Length: 378
Image 1 (tube, one colour):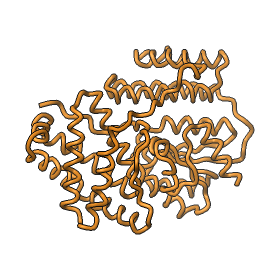
Image 2: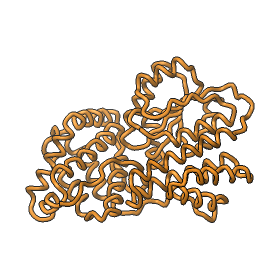
Image 3: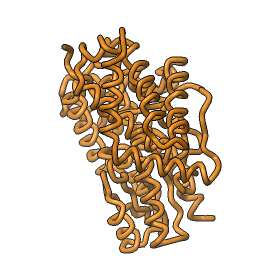
């Protein structure tokens, strides 16, 4: 029996074009939320029943269950069910399709047969039709069918900057090599020397540290480094950011305050730290709350700190309901406060920021400052 597959999504890869199933009517969106609640409540049961169907099928499905193990595959499908619930609640099948594509690429990197994902999704679709209420099964199954038709059709878009267009490509490559070799002091020196030689802090953020962090995630995704190596690399990137903060030149005060947080469930905040630092460089006062911020406490912080802008980070499609809930809770405290969102799913799916109730989204720290300034000047 093979070792269990890695189940936890860490990074989304930007997907290519596909036909999406969009829930546009309010009644349909309410149905999606209702189905999501059922999936949340009984996700493990649906996952177990899916693998039982697969085990009892003849041929490929039976052999794959024997190869990977019943429990490991239940965990795998359970993660997909949670993502499906997010997609249904928000009314966007793209969320589930991106998850399927992410998993397909993960399987490819780990030499898992492509048939496994097809079998998992096919039997999950059958289980949803058979055991969800008659009016709801086809809607949920339609999302799964969209993923079945889409996930293997196009490779992920290349997300790394072209070295020919990056004036700091050499710095990026040397920094990344130092990170991968666990030479933390050398990595910090590379960044500090680049700044002393004239590289601006925003450029080092955008063209060196952010691409390095992204590459670490993609290397894990391609099975080129371990989780331990990825975590160590993240800590080195954080230290480099801290060192750059000591070198930052601040603009005159803009008289504005921005509150920044990663939503509940999002354990990552390095990208958000970059956004906070760039707001501060432009004269804003940042209130940086960091990762995994509970909804109620986030709303309370908005009331206590009285910011002019809120910036929220959602790393995965699994964080979309937490983002929407956070925005709703914030609006109960300050109905007029502008809210900016960012993170993987908002970069992948056009207009998704509107579906969670935000006022805008930003793909980079520079754009976050520009749009935050525009929102607060409106």
